[in-house]
Image 1 (cartoon, rainbow, N blue to C red):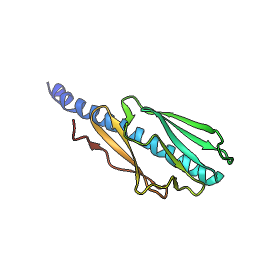
Image 2 (cartoon, one colour):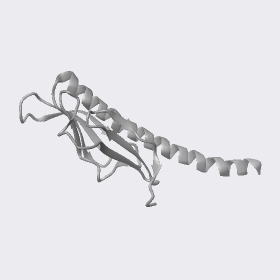
Image 3 (cartoon, rainbow, N blue to C red):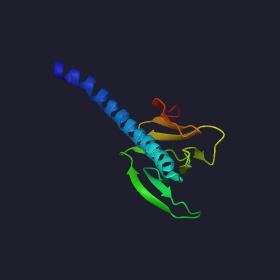
Image 4 (spheres, rainbow, N blue to C red):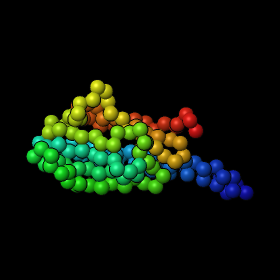
Length: 142
């Protein structure tokens, strides 16, 4: 009986923790892709970007030195199950050779990473290219 009571308390907590963990992994994957694109842009003095073709996929791309050059996909990342990038998020964040977001935005660029259970986490990119993660939050709509 005691085992049943303890299990009834622990199982929901463990499931909740796993969902938040998965959200954190997905958000860190997005942040890491952005940092990699910025690094590639500065180290090669060329434009690099993170492109979001689908809600669960993103790509790190690098552009050649010549104007109009095709993007070379360097990394393709798939987010964990149940984790998606919000449809309101920008579909591409690009960095120039100085590591600055291009075109230069007036304010921070925010990519919202959603979990199926109503939690989300923002990945914030400053105009100067610094990438930070906000704390996970519960969506007020759910």
